[in-house]
View 1 (cartoon, helix red, strand yellow):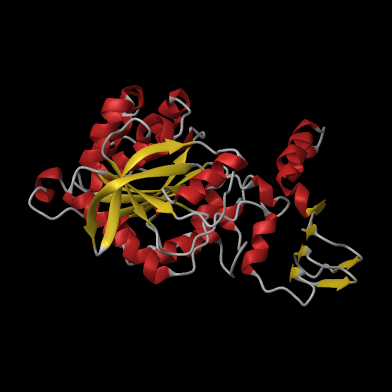
View 2 (cartoon, rainbow, N blue to C red; view 1 turned 120 degrees about the vertical axis):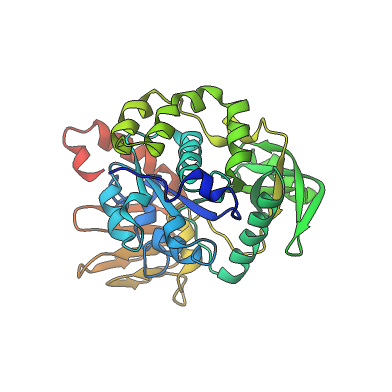
Length: 377
């Protein structure tokens, strides 16, 4: 498969820049095991709602860019599932990373993909697995971010106003007001900070000057290309064969397989955003949930009178505040359980206290070491 420019650069020169959306769909979603697996991670599951989270993301972004201008970047293990989830996309718009190299490589690849279609294009980089219900505000916020990125040489990030002093997210410190687009204010970014301790997170939230970093960005091809060239020149140089492939007759997958293993494994935050000076932040107005582990699911499903959240064939007797999921016709019956997670799939069952939900990754490391453990990963 070879992704080729739709029109020549010269023909684009006199037109307005087009809008594009690039969805990053490569995470493993390990904390949702046993439903999530290497080939079927969180974004390919209906963790919340009735369709996979990736399908929900594609539906939300429809007002922002046409289908032909929407890309999904995924992994080799997930390619089959992603293609099945995205039948509306042109096949060449689903691009496979041969190996994972974190978000800086994905953003640099996305920049080249959009550049091949429109060298002045403006594009959003969005995660595939977030839960957002208020589509109207979501679209309005992103349209404002697109307008800002088209009007000025800025890297726009969307910040999530924190609802609690979470230690699971990175934070962005807000600076002075920059400009407003679509009646939505944008602020200069003072700094990005890593996941803090509980005490520090409390200080951040009480100050009112910090937002969560949700990994949602909007920028133009010229602006992000210039920033990458300045702050991540090794990455840009290593990906130069990809640009040549997109402009010529080489097959893109073959070129990616050759160059990708050599790329540095680094996040876009470290490689670019923490170094760049022209970063601005738009505080989001929509609801947002990263849904990072099983306990978060309870926020999006109705509970019974005793706080039990269930999906599938489930019966609970003398139990409260549990999360119980069962696939197929298998019946899960629980007696006397409180604050537990029970997830049954065709080949595996998880039983764990809700307080231990973050330990699922440690459990999977045990499976990696087991003689036949790979069959359940």
